[in-house]
Length: 325
Image: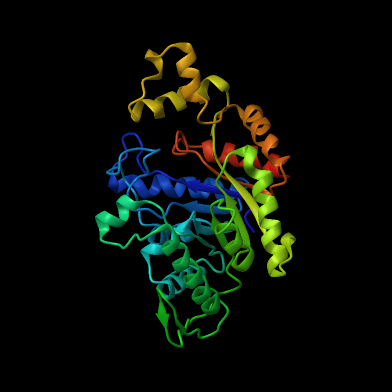
């Protein structure tokens, strides 16, 4: 399962237009595939997320992109981090991910979550609903999807979804791992215990032990062996051969997002830069090694500041592979 995943969260790069965009993305995937990452992941969104830029920035549809990346990689699994369940009918999603598994010769992974970005739903005419609605939908969807992945013909007359004798042919090449993203202790981690092979935690580092304890409790309640589930922690990194290069590349990224770090006081600039772990390989390795001590199995890492720079994903993979061992 995923112990070291590389996520590509942004598709807006300096001096790169639509005609050249895929090659920059594919190069990142190739570097990840050969440098220690076991999974290549892309966002399942239609608009850029607020923390990375305004909604009109470039955002590619994830399953079309993953199928294309299958032809540029050879060993890494391919996944969304994570699929917004609300965006697709679950039976159609099962077919989509199974097709990805076939075209990648058995490297598909389903990363999935309940969905949260209300602006996308409103803009695209997709029902958003309440928090409770979205988790009810996710549970029904996983019931359908796991059955179809297993070669069954599931039928469900649910509150949100109805399927009847749903066929999934061709079958997956092998078992498609399921990763559920998020850190909700009552709902998300219960669904992990019930359905998933992987848990990708999104939370403060100081919260990790409590999340692991909650997951173990759900596993005990459901009769699930906790050791069957791989837990990764989601993080950011900006690594470069030297500390000064990493700072320069991070500052350039922040500048493109409207933050002129050079005009700030030293204290304010340091505070802004601290939002993204940055530095040379030793610094990044030390930072992430601290998280490993909490009991997680690995990481999903994105490099929005400099992943597009040739060689940086390779350096990140080599660095992080030493951390996870």
